[in-house]
Each structure stands twice: as C-alpha cells, then as structure tokens.
Image (cartoon, rainbow, N blue to C red; front, side, top):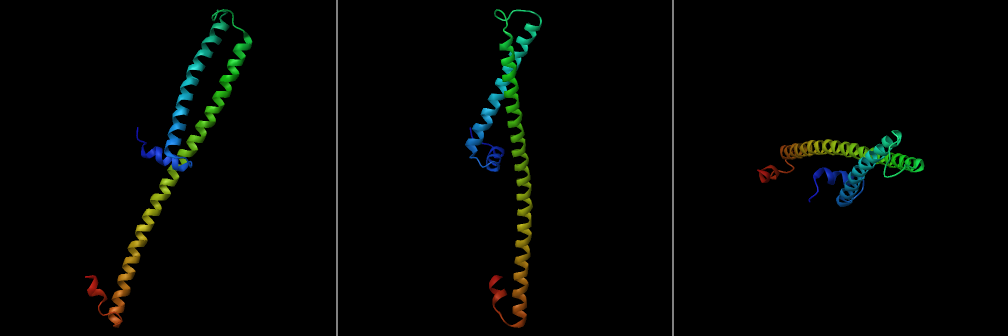
Length: 138
C-alpha cells in the first residue's frame, strides 16, 4: 500500500528511499516474529529436556547448545536493529522539530523584510525620491 508520512520521513532520515525503508521495516518485523517462534520452540525443548522428557526421540545436548547459541546471536542482532531504528526515529523527530523552527523563523524574517521594504518606500516618498512608488502598490 502507499507509504505513510512517518515512513517517508524515516526513510529520508536514514538516507533510504521510502520503499527501501519499508522493506527494511517489514524484514525486521518478520525477523522479530520468527525469533518469537524460535524462542518458544527452544524454551519448550529446554523444558522437556530438563524434565527428562523426549522431544521426538532423545535430546542431543549439542543440539540444545547450538539452538541456545543461535537464539543468543539472533537476539543480539535484533537488539542492535532495534537500537538503530530507535536512533533513526529520534533523529527524524529532531529533524522535524528543527525544520518547524526554521520555517517559523523564515516566516518571521519574510514579515520583517516586507515591512522594512515598505518603510524604505515610505521614506523615499517623503524625501521625494520615488513619488509614484506607494501609489503603484495600492
């Protein structure tokens, strides 16, 4: 579907196209879901192994250790990914706030410039330098 404004801003903040960012976010969500499934399966295997139960035959301790190691590696990767995403979100928020402040400042400066121009034109008219200037603008 169409990308949300938040997704477009996030993509800009991490120098990705919105489509690349959406794909990245989708893959992260899928990975998190798969980790939940694997974590549950590992926990079930560990529980059965501790009770001395069978998990489709005997449980090889090296398989349990390998699954625990895989779980640890994947969780570290997900934590790093989450940290990166949170930094990108914070950066996006900061940039949006700075952008709003700059827009406000720009509008104020435009207002001041317009009034300074008007004051200069009025002074020129009073000095007789531009007698027609104000009448043309009216």
